[in-house]
Image 1 (cartoon, rainbow, N blue to C red):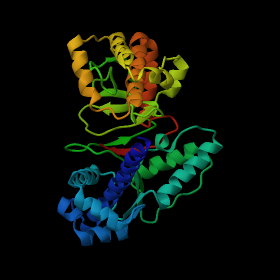
Image 2 (image 1 turned 180 degrees about the vertical axis):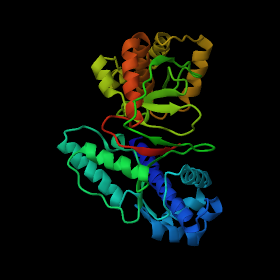
Image 3 (image 1 turned 180 degrees about the horizontal axis):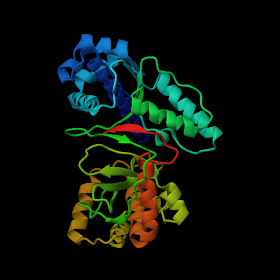
Length: 359
């Protein structure tokens, strides 16, 4: 089971490398052709290689990347849509960018950030400082030295506004992508707790938390239904098919003493799971929802067919519902938790730097 999970995670990570690098090639093609991108242009072998060699610095070889482009129509279409939306947005002001993914000047950006955050004694991960998946550097631009993180962030802001350096966060969108400038110096938005969303199935893998902003909700579950994966929140924005930022809830669980059934306790009941099933039903009632016995039985029969790791599954749904029960019954604390989670999952903080988001 652990080998399967490892292979799935490795495959997802490799796909991320491929699709992000493919955006770089697509953007390079628009510079070569000085035109909008199409699937036909993206799959033109000669253009592909020329763009890769001339305008791309990525951590994947060209043959593997071209194979991905020609064999994955869904991603090819998403890349074409995202690239055209980016070009239309006006944030890429020049036609001589090099597009980086996991190499060169992009790596230098994050090396500089890590040196400065250590110097300033700030705790912040790379993606929460700036979630840029790819970076565009105008020809001739270099990264100077800085005394502190604030000065570096101002450099990122000025460079982005001038078009000299552009950090781009990518999401796989459905339909017409949106392109927005995330300005970290602007007033920080806040959201408050509204309620737990009624589930379609009693035995989902987690819960959805609705907020006072009708466009924003949080999906709470274990995103790898294994015994080691922490309960995590993922930001959801209505009208977007893209996945947004994630944030673990471990520190809030500890801070507020939110009960979490242990793995050892779950294992005691796993062979005869009636106790765990009753626990799920009880926790849903604490979140405001009750279900008929026939629905409980039907939903459990449907869920059983999909469970690979029973302990991991019950840990995900029970621990998530325990968080949901706490939010529903401690709404003052719920507002505090949701506001912090939203800002951090969105990579918004007083130490973060500006970027362009495509979703």
